Length: 337
Image: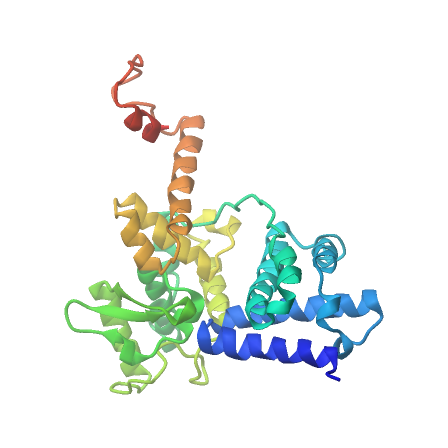
């Protein structure tokens, strides 16, 4: 007779190795996120059932136990709704796979797949104003090799809006220095996109690679630490925090801000939008799969304009107030709201 716990273990291994790694080619961060969710779920089941994790079976994975786990995430672990939804997404991905791999479990999987995510308020993302970004770019001491290295990283992040992992893993062979210069970034799901580079960025990166003694080495990492190894997420965050503290001396507004690699990504998107760049182009620039993800910048920009109006920083209409007049173009009216 087959051990029920063995069936769960083999199905989980197949889900991570075959479904995520081979079929979907999921990003490493996605795999880690799903792995952590399942570790927490199995540990929760172990506590509530009294069984060791390796003795759990598919019979222990019901809609009721999933809901109890999600409640535990929010109450015991005190995680936010967004984290709860991330855990649910990891579980649902497995049960969607299991519904095909184990058709006899279809009804059990369907009940779990019917558990819905909770609505949560979208956090207002942070970004830097243009004078704050200029201060960040000027904060590094370019007279030293380390300062030039840090300056190149900050300029690259602002130019491209790259994710931190995309910047940390960047190799010299992915950069085209000839006109028109651009970089090939490998994003989520191993999706590749081309992002144009300013000539200043291309020159800075070329000099940086040469200074590191990596000219002509296609596989050499562009951004490295003192030991010549590729930067980590923590290393990038440290560089930005160091630059922020120095820049705050000339730009006091930065003293109250938390600047992360994603802050610069939001800054790039916001500045592109304010410069009149088409929203679909911004989506391609950032590597967003969903148009809805990019649309958040339009909503945020509208909120900024409303806040400025409320504070009296900008006038309602040029030339003073005007009386409202009805218009036959209802779509134009709705767009103006």
